[in-house]
Length: 196
Length: 77
Image (cartoon, rainbow over all chains, first blue to last red; front, side, top):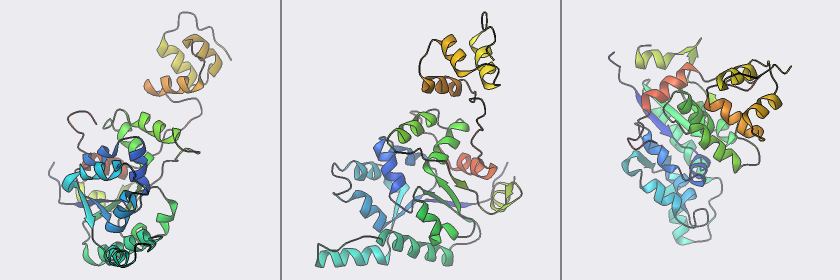
């Protein structure tokens, strides 16, 4: 069946999914997305700065994704680096959220109706950000992503990975998904994109 | 609640557990395991759910989306 063109990007709006995958040694899983993975520069800075990644494992894992991972430059991220160069003690708290809000605003103004942002997140605070309010946004947390892949037969060790993730947490990560705009079961973008 | 499990196959035991016809303890004794986690793992590995559990509800849109954009690596991940 011929498919219509659809523009999908996986957007990682906070550090949590990357850090979770790093803890189980599976950042490489992101490399199996056949679409671009986007992370704003400020979040990339947060996950790879020496305080959070002392052994450089996260930075190394992300580097191995090569051009699958797109680091999105934001005014927030660039501005922070300038300020940090001037004063190394400059704090970066909350700048990741501000940077992803900046990028969400850009996406809202520049993307067409065929664009589907798949937001892979863990921090519930992300749900309050503009990225989670974009038209046709599809929200998925790490465990829902892995369990769905497992259920669809695309990732045989998906359950084991979820168990490994939960073994390192105080409480299990409850799978969460919010499908793109839907009409009954089928989403409008799904029909538009895949003729289903 | 405990049926006579003599002569049952693994599939029979897991099916009875899933349908709530036998208890966890009976199944664990038959399987000769002591951990409930192991029992859950055996059930899941055989495509069964623990009694009363609901499968994760994943929307058709999410399933279709991930199938469309996932390319499993040839080496297995």
